[in-house]
Structure formats: C-alpha cells, structure tokens
Length: 475
Image (cartoon, rainbow, N blue to C red; front, side, top):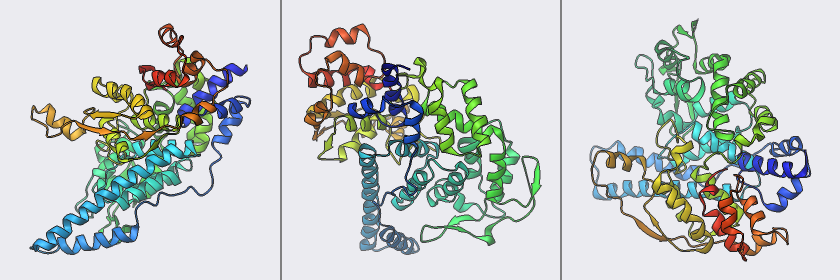
C-alpha cells in the first residue's frame, strides 16, 4: 500500500476508533502498517482511570437523609427545604459528572478506550438521578470496555443504576417485575425474535433478589429470590441471574446482535450481512472477547472501503469532542457544553429511553444541522449563540401534543478559546488550503468545496470555513 492510501486509512481509523488525529501524529503513524497501528490502539493500561467526580461518602449521607425524610408523614418547612437542597446538590453533581467526562473525552490519550465507553454508554442506556450510581456505571463500562463482554454484562446488570432504572429493585419472589429481564434480551443481548414471552417471565424469576443496599452496592437477597425450577430457552433448572446470562451468551444470535450494533457504530449505519457474519462467528469463537473483536474489525480490508469512509454522521458528542481536540479548545465556561449537548440531542447520562439514542440520520434535522454549522465559527472565533436547536425528548412530546413549551431560546456566550498557534504549527509549512481541507474532511473533496477555498490566503479562515460545512458533520 502506498503512503497516500495509508495516510487516508489511518485517518479513517482514528476518526472511527477515536475522535480524530493531529496532523503530526497522522504523518508519523502513516509510515506504519495498519495492523501495527491497530495493535498500538488496543494497548490499554491494565488499570483504567475511573471518573472520581462524585464523592460516594457524600452521596451516601444524602441518601440516608433522604430516606429519613421520606419516612416521615409530615415535614416541617425546614425539612422540605433540606430535601430540596439535597436534590439541587445531586443535580449539580450530575452536571459536573457530565462535564468531567466531556473534558476527559476531549483530552484523553486513550481515544479507543473512551470511544468504546461511549458506545457502551449508549448500548446500556440508563438514566439515574443519583450521581454516584451514574458514575459507578460509567466506570464499569470503561473498566470492561475492551475486556470480556460477559463480565461487562454481569457487572452492568448488578449496577445500582441499572437495577433502579429497570425496576429490578421491585423484582421479588411471587411478584416478579419483568422490566429488566425483557430489556436484557431485547436491547442488551439477543434482540427481538430470539426469545418468547415465557422466556421473559422465567428470566424475571431468575433475577428476583438482585438488588442494592443503602450504601449503593449490589446485594443478593436470598429471601426475595425465587429458587424454584424454571424453564428458559427450553432448558429446565433452578436458574439464577448469571445462569440466565450464560444461556443467552450460548446463543450465536447474541454474538450477531452485538456485532451488528458495533458495526453500525464503528463502520456503517447499514449492516453488511457478510461482514457481520464474519465478525459474529469470530466473536463467538473468542468467547466474547471485545478486544479481539475490535482488532479483527479494524484490521479487515472492508473497514477501509470507500463506502465506509466519510459516510457516517457524527454524533453530537463526537462532533463537539472532535472539534475541541482538533483545535485545542479551552472552554472558560464549560457549562456551555451541556447546553450544546442538550440542543444537539445527545445529553450524556440522559438518554431518551432505555433504547438509547437512535443515531444515524436521526442526529440531524433542519434546526440541529443549522446549529451544528454555526458552532465551529462560534467556538473557534468566540461569539453568542441562540440555543433553540433540538429539543429534549420530553419537550418534543409537548410539541407533538400541540401544547406550548415553556422552553425559550437562550442566548449565551460560547466563551471558548482555540489554540490557533498550536494548531497551525502542527501543519506542514507549505500546506495549501485544498490540502488542509482534505485533512479536515473525511469525504473526498468536491469541486464545490475546492472552488470555495482555492483563493483563500489564510489557513485559519480556511479551517473555520471547512468546519462550518455540512461535509464536516461526516466521519
């Protein structure tokens, strides 16, 4: 493979396996084979750094006080105010957790690890009002992001955030709650059409007693567990939750389902049956080792086909993180990143529902596209922005019912600073506008784009112009 093709392939790899790549790094890595670069990407430290935004001891004290206040029949005015203050504090902690993860995404030197964490964040979609629970789940997804899918699945299933979100805290012998058992199969593992309603009911019985204690740690309560015989996937036995998970993983259809989701996230929104069959057979043989699967995916020739380059719409987080990393952006008021996420339709830790963000073309509508195209010039040149883009799912429901929404456009200063000297110094000395455009964009340059920039004298202006084009929304 010649250097030019390898340059394109490595750039594509880092756009999909990470959030883009700086020019000097691309220039250096393009001298290596794709296989070697993939192996280097997968060299993850044994101990990944957890997010530590939320102090568990502080949250446990808050939980204890909430429990005490909740047990009272009537509250004094001071106690009502105290309860409201706890809620306000937890909401503030949740926002801080969001921003800390965004800053990690922007600054990480382990892009694949964080990209995989982002994938699992959407796959195991979960909302929690408890910031400690949300942080726990995020750290689980990072810790096992490239390890054993079975271990990841078990740990996610035992997390207080998921047990609370899908009501397994109420799942007990004689009164099974089917919510977690259903989503476990429908959305997390094997997919619709591969199980029966009987399987859901029997699985729910197996997960009775899976709960968490007052300290926010998993606890199996034997007294609440249904220890009678169950029939699941035609097998009979006294199954518990982990036995159900084992049987789900024994089904090749589970490997197909997971590989399809990964393919749509990393390769193409339209699944290729032959490629997915190749991946799923391998994943199954490798006993669901995620690193092995990703190495095979990124090393496959078809991953670098032209049909897979510059054809995916960036998610809002990929767009914001990629732009910020590319131009070394510092946000003096990081809260603006929450406003941007919300208006673009991907607010981390707040998926629309348990199915997660739909992705693909759903990322773009007329309002969100216009906002996306405004953001680069405002972030890179600073300025005011009118936050009236994509509505929160709850606001969309209000709009759909023909009601008036209380949400009003908010004008806010981006208050960000790009490090232009650092960006410009990273480029080759004789790079021209067309070459810069080819580096910044994933789709091949069209005559229209080339014509627009061919007479530009400023590389800075060229960069702002290119990042404000619709083509920059593709990766």
